[in-house]
Amino acid sequence: MKRFGPQNKNQMKGKTNMYVSVHHNITNPQEWAKTTRNIMAMTEQGRLPNGLKGLMYLPAVDGRKADCVWEANSVDALKNFLDRETGSAAKKRIHPDQRGRSLRVARP
Image (cartoon, rainbow, N blue to C red; front, side, top):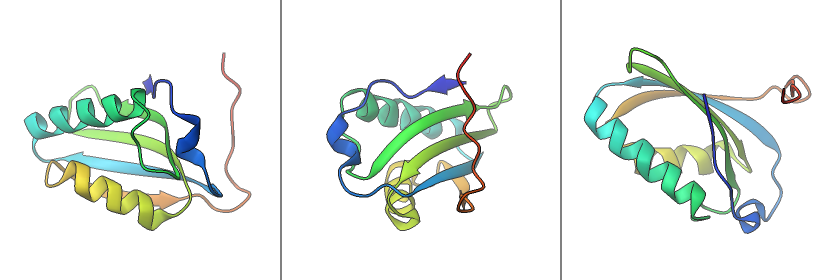
């Protein structure tokens, strides 16, 4: 499990109103590796679009699947960003939170 690195506080300007989980079925592992490096760099350098904040990235051991959790001001904003960044490297299913049903667990 990787937690996204430091993020620019300006990334979350505007109302953030949901958690969104994304399940990726990786179809092109080489392109996926390049994509994840790029998104991690964008995160660390504070270059994610406003209204998006990566919270967690969980790649499967076999390299065929991955999950991530985001804070987003809209599902469409996250979907558009991921479509642009991941291209055909993976197929994805996006799951917005059910209002009031998300559980935030304290860090160890």
